[in-house]
Amino acid sequence: MKTVYSKREKELFHQAYQEVDKHKYTVSQDPFRLHYHIMPPVGLLNDPNGFIHFKGVYHLFYQWNPFATEHGSKFWGHFSSTDLVNWVEEPIALAPSEWYEKNGCYSGSAVEHEGKLILFYTGNVKNKEGNRETYQCIAISEDGLHFQKKGPVIHLPKGYTAHFRDPKVWKKKDTWYAVIGAQSERGEGRAVLYSSKDLFTWNLLGPIAGSNLNGLGNFGFMWECPDLFELNGHDVLIVSPQGLNPKGYFYHNLYQAGYFVGQMDYEKAAYKHGEFVELDRGFDFYAPQTTLDEKGRRILFGWMGVPEENESYHPTIHYHWIHCMTIPRKLELKNGKIYQHPVEELQVLRDKQVAYPNVHLNGNTIELEQVKGKAVEMMIDSITSHTASIEISFRGTARFIYNPIEKLATFERQSLKENKMEKRHCPLHSLHKIHIFLDASSLEIFLNDGEEVFSSRIFGNPSDETIMFSSNGDTGFHLKKWNLKKIF
Ligand code: FRU
Image (cartoon, rainbow, N blue to C red):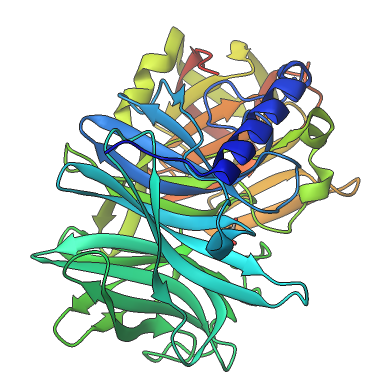
């Protein structure tokens, strides 16, 4: 099967590549370009899409507006990798060329079937009056690189608004399932389940979770990017709800991304689940997507951004690009909680290890001579204090603090909008390990082997590479640090 592209598709591909060429030099001059995180070549990147391990190669697609650093008619950009570290930029996978997707090939997922890579995505249409239409569409590829569109296979069912999108498809026994992010006509967020025997004809099974369902109470006006999978004998539903109000230390970003742990009854199309838990405690994390790789690992990528939040304040927009992905993380379910581990492949990025086996702080602030840099991994363990705080500041623009008396982890950064520090918190019973991935404009902090994670973009003075340690009392720890190689 040879892929046949329409005239409009070819035109759009051409225009997008022209845009890449036009801004290539400007983009490359940005000191905030990341060294080892996936970013768009130009324009705006948002959700990870179609993440799959297909014939030994990882494919990661992404929501992409090549023409502006704002949201718009999305394309699917495409990277591939054999090791989750070194990524190849592949030809554009989808461009919004057809009537049923003319305002964007929105988010979706990938499956393998009979040796083919099959994409499911949302065709987004906005007519002149601003009314939306939504179509869940299919595109098929034999080589994993060129995609033949087959058009809509699911139409908007009764009872939902046109905020109905982001199909995630998987197979269980001999049946295919799709979970779709939705809004009920009453304005409630929903995860809606479908089934199919052949990937083309789909039966609506109904909502499996949502606002005011399963005893959840009022829980947002729209649920985006659902992902349902089995982990350690449980069924995990990841979702990005919109419209949660801040509650104590939680839900302070404009929109959230988190998960439920539960049990799915496929016969009854019913899901029983526990509480919603945020996957990340930082400022920038949304619309994550997972896949099961050929090694049996459940791996997640998140978008290191949040829709509509701070987007016009990112300094990178002066260089014609915005946003990036998180590092890939392996998920583990332990005692009903998801732990996130940086995939071990990332260790090949390590260069020049330095070790400080016994750092001691005594109410003071110190710099460790060789601990600084633009792209750095740090492992801090054997933390001895049970009473004194531990604080790590980065480039004078961000700071992590753990207070063992309050049992509280805090991350603060210089606000992108105003001249002030802004904070996010998370309760944590104790802290024994801090694993840090710092890049030219991002920071991911894993606590206690992935029990909690803070992911955020940070934009300080690009020439400031300092990292400082302090405490309000007596504390000690072991530290290892590596420089990380530049991939991009
Ligand atoms: C989440 C989202 C999805 C949608 C896509 C459009 O960030 O709003 O629901 O499919 O982005 O780019």
